[in-house]
Image (tube, rainbow, N blue to C red; front, side):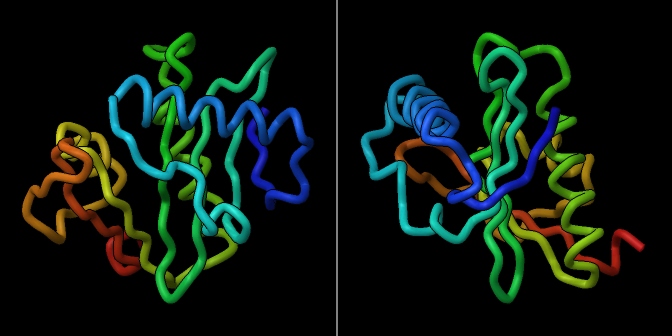
Length: 145
């Protein structure tokens, strides 16, 4: 079941599972040595699907615009359409609770077509972050009416 919660609504075990998945994916699997856990986690909305373990995760950061980040599907559950479900859950929540706000993300460049399928467009050229090609993308509210 998909849930969207603040950090203090998560159990210690759930937060452990989230941070472990993020580190396993972004630091170990993608071989990027950087501070994965940051202060934005304290204010973010954490989007999770737990079903016998953490299957997928993303966070929504509130500000002048909204940001979706740390989009992950657990390696054990990849290839089952969970990334599409995860983005749909995030965007439906945003449309329901933040109608009229734009949504931004920093996506890995090879996923640009995936994000385009949700109405995002590129707002930057491809750049390297932690030696991985990324592109900034935005979904403006007017495009989704």
